[in-house]
Image 1 (cartoon, rainbow over the protein chains, first blue to last red):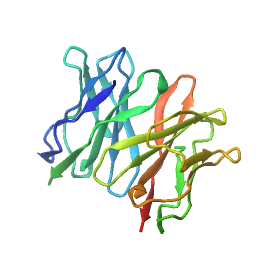
Image 2 (cartoon, rainbow over the protein chains, first blue to last red):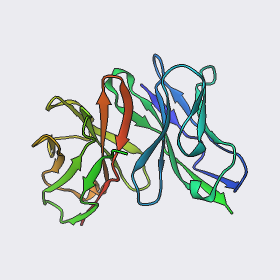
Image 3 (tube, helix red, strand yellow):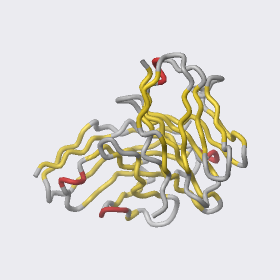
Length: 113
Length: 114
């Protein structure tokens, strides 16, 4: 069965520093991977996805993610964090041919001024 | 930018009452979904809907749940007899289909069952 793990409940960084939010996955077949962000009292906003092609995927708000097949990881990154990036981040994998998304447990990112 | 819209944003209902959550998916999208997120827990898949029928549902989506696309724009989730454990944020989502792989979510409807 497909699964996603986000090993960190919370990540804290200082504004201006690079940030990484970790995600590992387990799938049978080719992985279709997604990152969503949830701001307080808001819905899930799509950030970026990996379907095929370049391992480094660029997305919204300056975020990018690196797909690593050998490590089965899809870590979210940003070179310089902003206080406004503070939110809950979810990694998700598509469940085979069904297009159903399997979500990780989420990582709360806190960016200190 | 087109978006998925949901109403109501928050509803409080008494246990045993029926609730209908409404969604307007993105206009050219063909695939529709409901997910839910119990407070502090993962986002969970409930049901997918395509071509006016359910294409997949989870174990959570039992007989008390139903979905409907009553017209060309709305997509509804009905909970027939609410239970305390149905308290959650319910997200509607849609996907274009064909080459469109991305699922776009609405802002959510927060349901509180008392």
